[in-house]
Amino acid sequence: MFEAVEIGNVLSKDVYKALIPDLRVNLINAQYDLREADFPVIILLAGNDRIGCNALLHTLHDIMDSRYMRTNALGRPSTEELERPRFWRYWRALPQRGQIGVFLGAWPLNAIHEYMNGNLKKSGLERRLEHIRRFEQALTADGALLLKFWLHLPKPVFKKRLKAAKKNPREVWQIEAEDWQAYKVYDEAIKVAERVVRQTDTGDTPWQLIESTDARYRDATVGQAILQALSQRLPGDTADPWPNPPSASTACDPHTRQPTILDAVDLSKSLSRSDYRCQRTTYQGQLSHLSDQAAAQGISSVLVFEGWDAAGKGGVIRRLIAAMDPEIYNVFPVSAPTPEELAHPYLWRFWHRLPRAGDVTIFDRSWYGRVLVERVDGFASAAEWQRAYSEINDFEEQLCDRGIVLLKFWLHIDLDEQLRRFQDRETMSYKKYKITEEDYRNRDQWPLYEQAVHDMILRTSTEHAPWHLIPSNNKRWARIEVLKTYCQQLEARL
Image 1: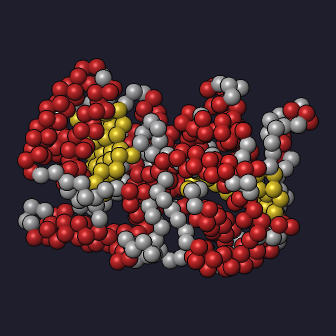
Image 2: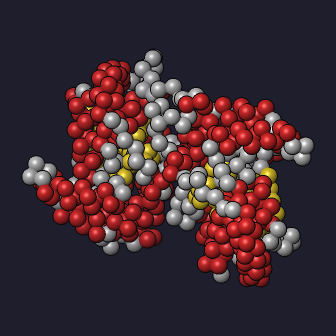
Image 3: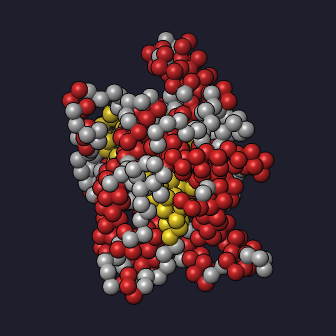
C-alpha cells in the first residue's frame, strides 16, 4: 500500500511560492466561515515521518489563523489519563463546533506503538481497530469533519534524513532515539501500519496517503485537501483549491499534472515473436500442470483483469484458459449491473460468482468498476465510491483468508498505443464490434480515469492482494508476464 505513493512527487519552489498566498487567503476565509458553522473540524496527522508531521504543523499555523486552531500533541498518558478509559484523553481534547483541532499521531500511532512494543497482541490490535472505527464513526455521525493524513517516507529517504539531521547542528535537536529505533524496525512496523490504515479507512473517514519526501509537495497537498474539504462542507462559494483536470491532449504533459503510480510502469518492455512463442509454450505447459494440481488439492483462484480499453485483456485471458481444463474455469465479462443486481449491494453479484474449491474464476472487469467507471461517470455517489475502497479490501481479505489465490492485474498502455489499436479495430472485420463511441468518450476522460486508477491502486494494493501493473504496449510481453505471474503464485501456494 505505502509503496504505491513512492512516485517522486515534487513541487518546485516557484510553483509553491505562487500557490501559497491564495491558499492562505482561502483557508483563513474558510476558517472565519467555519466559526459560524455547526460542526467542528478534526485533523489527524500521522505516519512514519514524525519530523515531517511537526514541520507540516508549523506550516498550517503559518497559513491559517492559529487562534481558531488548537494542536493536541498527546504523548505518554498522564496518571489522570491512565485512570480512565483509553479514548478519554481524545474525547476531552475534541474541538467545539466552529473550531479546528489538530491531533499528532494520536489513536492510530498509539495502537501501532503498543503492538510493536509487545503490549498489544494480534487479537488486541483487532479490538483496538474496531474501537477506532467506532470512535471515528461517532465523531462523523455527530457532524464532525474528520480529515486523516498519513505522511509516508520510503525507507532509504528515512535513513538519509536521519543521517543528514545528525550532521546538521540546526536539525540534530529534532532527532530522538525513537526515530532511530523506528528505522531499525521499519519493515515490520510498515506492515502493521498498513493494516491499521487499511482497517480504519472507511467511506466517511478515509485516509489520505501523502508522499512526504518533498516538503513543499507535502505541505501544499495537505493544505489544498483541507481547503477542498472545507469548501465542500461550508455553505457559499469558498474558492476551489484544485485546478481544472487536464484535457486528454495534455494528460501526459509533466507541466500540467502530478505524477501517478502508472508513470512508474516501463512501457518499453517487449518480446520478439520467437522469444514469445518459446516462453508461451513453457509457461502454458507449467500452468496446465499446476492448475491440475491445484484442482486436485481444492485450491481455488480468482483472477481480476482491469486496464485501459484495448489494453489486451481478452488476449491475455485467451492465453491463460488455453492451458487449463475447461471444466475448472469460468470467465465472467463484467458489464452494467442488471436490475436484480442493482437491488442488492454492489459486491453481491461478485460473491455469487466465486469459484468452488479447485476452480478458477476470471473476471474481465470486476468490482473495481465502482471506483473507476462509476466514479468517473457519476453512476456512484462520492460517498459510495469512497466507501468502496474499505469494502473491497475487506472482501479480498476474506478471499485470501479462505486460501483462494487472488491475483489483480492492471494492463497499462499509453494514449498513442490506444489510438493505434482503436484505428486497427475499425479496419478489421472481426474486431469492429469491439470499438464503440463509448470507447472514444472514455478516452476523452483519460486524465480522470488516470487519477481514479492511481487512487484505486494506492488504496487497494495490500500485502495479501497487491496489484500487478503489466506493461501492455507490447501484447506479447503482457501475455507472458501474466502467465509467469500466475504460475509463480500457484507454485508458491502448492
